[in-house]
Image (cartoon, rainbow, N blue to C red; front, top):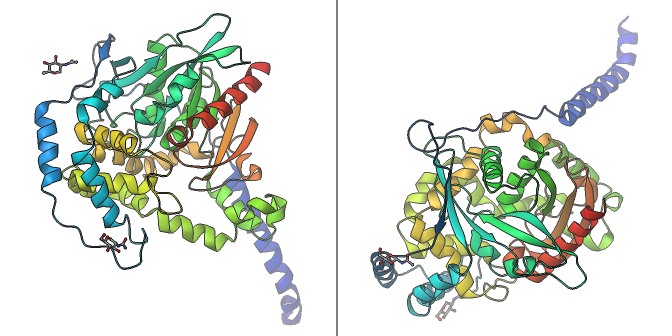
Amino acid sequence: MACCFFIYLPGLMIVSIVFILKKIWESLSKIPPVPKLENEWWGPGKSGEEDTSIKPFQINISDEVINDLHHRLRNTRPLAPPLEGTKHEYGINSNLTKEITDFWLNKYDIRHREKFLNQYPQFKTKIQGLNIHFLHVKPKETQGVKVLPLLILHGWPGSVREFYEIIPILTTPQKGRNFVFEVIAPSLPGYGFSDPAVRPGLSTPQMAVILKNLMLRLNFDRFYMQAGDWGSVIMSDMSILFPEHVIAVHNNHCVDISPKAILKRILYGFWPSLIVEKKYEHLIYPSKKFFLGILARTGYFHIQATKPDTVGAALGDSPMGLAAYILEKFIDVDGALTKRFEMEALLDNVMIYWINNCMTTAMRLYAERYNTKNIDLGIDKIPVPVPTGCARFHLDIAYFPEALLKDKYPNLIHLTDHEQGHFAALECPKVLATDLYDFTEKVLKL
Ligand SMILES: *[C@@H]1O[C@H](CO)[C@@H](O)[C@H](O)[C@H]1NC(C)=O
Ligand SMILES: *[C@@H]1O[C@H](CO)[C@@H](O)[C@H](O)[C@H]1NC(C)=O
C-alpha cells in the first residue's frame, strides 16, 4: 500500500492546491448584496424635526482669526535644516516650508482671497443633523442648450477651492456642445465649512447618503457626478446605493482596491503585455517597484486610518505644520510645488482647513473607511452600475489598466489618458472639463 500512496501523493497535492485556489478565487469574486443604509443622524442630540431651509452663506473671517494666524506665522520655531543635497525624500523640504510660511505671512492678502472665495453663490442646509456647505453655480447663458445637474466632489487634503477654475468652464456653453452644467460642489462632512459628525461611523457610503439627500433637497432627482480622490469613492458608493438618482459618473481617480484586483495586478505582472501597452508598462510594473512606491508615499494613510486625532492635535495648532502637511501632497515628481499650481491657490485650500480647524475631522474619514465595520459592508467589491468615464492622470497615485478596471466599472464607456496629476481640477481645469464634456456627450447618445 505504501508504495501506491507515495505515487499518488504528488497528484493529490496538485488536486488539493487547485481546489484551494479555486475556492479562494470564488470567494474573492463573490459580489456581496448592496447594503441598505438609513438616514442616520450625525449631529449633536437625537434626530428630530429638521430645519430644511437652504440659507445663503458667505465666508467671513474675523479679524481675531487673522491676527491670531499672523501671530502664529510670525512666531514659528526654526525648522531643522534639510539634509544636504535632498529634495523631499524625508518629507517636505524645510526650505520650502519656510518659503510657504513667508508667502502666507507677507504676500497672501486674506481679505482679497476671501472676496475671491466668495465669488460663487454658497449655501448651507441641514441634513441628518449636519450643516452642509455647498457652492451652487447655474449657467448664465442657457439659450439653446440643455442644462445638466452635476454634483462634483473633492477629497483629502482638498476642498471646494479645487473647483474655482473649472466651474466657469462647466457652466459656460462650449462651442459645438448642446449642453452645459449646473454645478453643485459641497464641502464633504467634516471638511471646510460643513459640520463634522459627532459620533463614529460617518464613512464614504454614509456620506453618499447625505450628499444624495442634498441633491434631493435641491430638487435634483437625477444627476451627473464628477470626482477624484475620496470624492470618487463616495461617488462610486452613491451610484451603487442609489443608481436611480445617479445618471453617470466621471471619475479622475478610478481604482479597484478589492483583494481580487490586487491579486490580478500581481498575476498579470508575469505577462504585462496582456493588459498594458508597452509605453505605459513602467507605470505599474515591476510589481515590486510599484508596491514599494505606494508604500513610500502612503505613510500618512496608515496614520490617518488609525490615529488621526493624535497628529490632528499638532496640525490644528500650527499653521506652518498644517501647510507643510497639506502641501507636501501637491509637490510633483520633479520636486516642484508651484510649477503646476499657484501658491495663492494652494494657500486658499490650506486656509479653508485653518479657519475651520477641520484637519482632524477631515482625516477621520480614513479611520471610518478602513475599520472592520465598513470593510464588512463589502461595498468595494460591488461594481458601479451606471455609465462610467475614467480619466486617468498618469501622475496620480496609481495607474490602472482597463483590464483591472472592468470588474469595478463594468459600464466603462470612456477611458482616457492624460499626463497630469492627482489634483486635476486645480492643475488642468480645461483638460478635465473637456474630458467630462466628451464623456457626457457619449452618455447622452446612449
Ligand atoms: C462679517 O462679520 C462682521 C463681524 O461679525 C460683520 O460686521 C460683517 O457685516 C460680516 N460681513 C459679511 C459679508 O457677512
Ligand atoms: C536650504 O537653504 C539654504 C539657504 O538658502 C541653502 O544653503 C541649502 O542648500 C538649502 N538646502 C536644501 C537641501 O535645499
